[in-house]
Image (tube, rainbow, N blue to C red; front, side):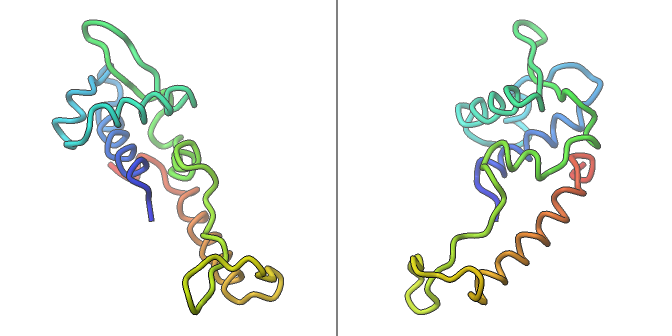
Length: 134
């Protein structure tokens, strides 16, 4: 499941990828296409700029643009920037849905299953790029 931050980022990045080669895209244009909080979007775009996914231009005709072509930016990279490592939840008790503090990661079937889920997700996310979203 993607966080709201990652969902908003992918909406904005899709707009930027479609706009590739046409100059900077103002935040107002992104918000018109994908209604969302301007303040929250500004925070997200700033994080992506600091991580060299985006570049920005200030002033008249300013906005954001991709630093690399859309096919060079994989989805896992964006998620890691915004949400940290891509990993399943820690082991939980199957009875009470509470964190299981005494989980034996070597023999825990749920832990093994979640590692398998993580690996499958990563295989897809690392192969897919912004180009796939447009």
